[in-house]
Image 1 (cartoon, helix red, strand yellow):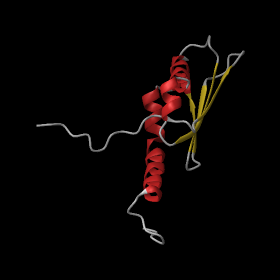
Image 2 (cartoon, rainbow, N blue to C red):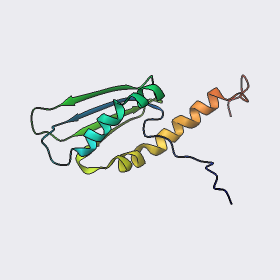
Image 3 (cartoon, helix red, strand yellow):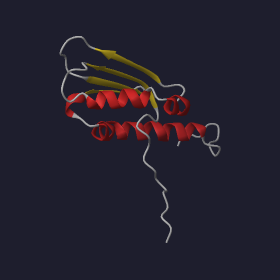
Image 4 (cartoon, helix red, strand yellow):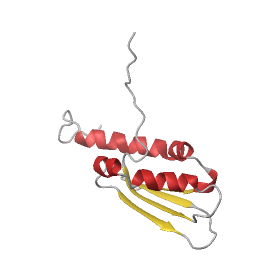
Length: 118
């Protein structure tokens, strides 16, 4: 029996407006920030998400690593990256990301009619 992928999970950067990563390279457990910077700065991500605004900051002092994510619907999330993996971060803002997806689908649907608020 073929396996159908009806409800694929959203990509980490889907419906994300901006990402800011700040970390100290010498600090332990900052691998998540390095992985995220490499992912965000890759050519495939830039082609897939052209409107994504990304920035990163290398700190010269031993401060905690932070990742700030703003979704297209205006909701903001901030994470202490020392304590989370990328999958755990994604689980934290997945609900808001899915709501942004539903909002987008309602406005971009070819079945949507003018004056249809439901």
